[in-house]
Length: 193
Image (cartoon, rainbow, N blue to C red; front, side):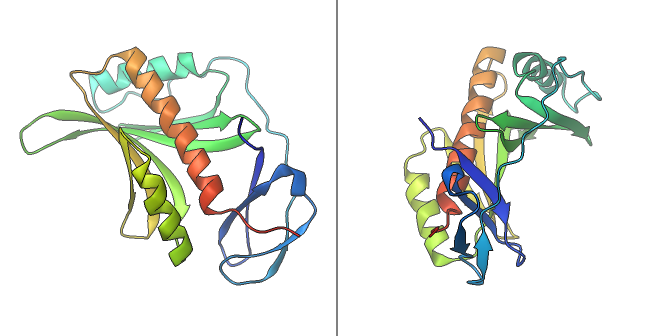
C-alpha cells in the first residue's frame, strides 16, 4: 500500500514531496537548502457527474479512447481538456494527489500509428534525482523515462494504435498515472525532522 504523500514546492521552484504524517514539520529544500515547512494536505473537490468531452480529438480512434477514459474514470478525473486535438486528463490518485496524462497519436517513419501516453514527472535538477530516475527506468517494461529539452522528466508509454483496444488503453493510462505518481514521490522526497 502506498504511503500518503503531500506534494508542494519551495520558493525556489523545486517540487518536493513528503509523507502526509509529516505535515507541519520542518525540512530542507533539496535544491536551495532553505528551511521549509511541510504543508497540511488540502481536501480535493471531486466532481460527481461523469465529465463530458470538451472537443473532438485529432484522430477518430483517439477521440473514442478519450470518451472511454472519461466514462471509465469519471470519479478519478477532476479536469480534462482537448488542445489542438490532443486530450489531457488530470487524475485524482488515492490520497487526493493529482497526476496529469496526455494522449497523442504519432506516426513513425514506416507510417505506423502509435498511441503515446505521457505524464510529466517534474524538473530534475540534481545528480541524485538523475540517479534515482535511471534506477526507476530499469524497472519499467512497457514505458520509459526521459528528460526533455527543458530537463523535465517525462514518463511515456507507446502502443501500436491498430493493436490496442479500449480495455488495454484504460489499463495503460491507469498504469502510467500511478507510476508517474510513485516516481514523483521517490524523486522529490525530502528529509523531515
